[in-house]
Length: 117
Length: 112
Image (cartoon, rainbow over the protein chains, first blue to last red):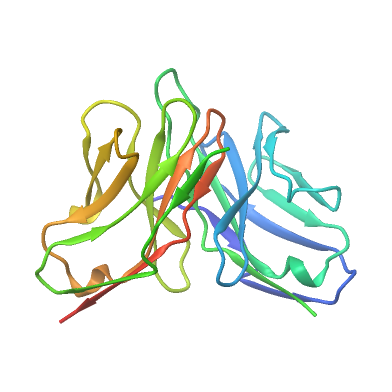
């Protein structure tokens, strides 16, 4: 069964450093997402991406965040200058195209645990 | 703004007994509701969804959920719990776009 994959599984970085989290969505999916879950808190939406542009973003997704689909398979989240409060589990997700009347579920990867020291 | 509430941090049930994990939601417009399960060190796995149609939705692993519009609820149920059902369960509502808003999660503990 196809699945979303994420690398690395755990990333440790120093405050102020840039990190790139990588995701390979399911191959025929067209919508891509990033969510995060701070330890002990809810899963929070960051951004959705379709047709090579951001389609929706939350207040969390400020100027220090960016997303990119650099090739036909990868989807990345970049944090330019990490802060302590960016420490969280980051989940990538993808979904198939949305046809009229059909809302397809999002398939999630296993997550990348980001630790900012 | 949409929101989801899962009033129980943890639900304990004996194996073989029925289980219910509660979820209530608040959204303007039609609700699109989802249940996901998270096992340790794993991502969120889709269980089932309600978009329209029958209020009782059947999903993976024998789970089902009942949509109740008047009570704005979407409780997850299973007639007979298994020890392997022990996990963290998340209810979510989707907006007109693609954003999922999750509840805080409920830990289900099924004891032998």
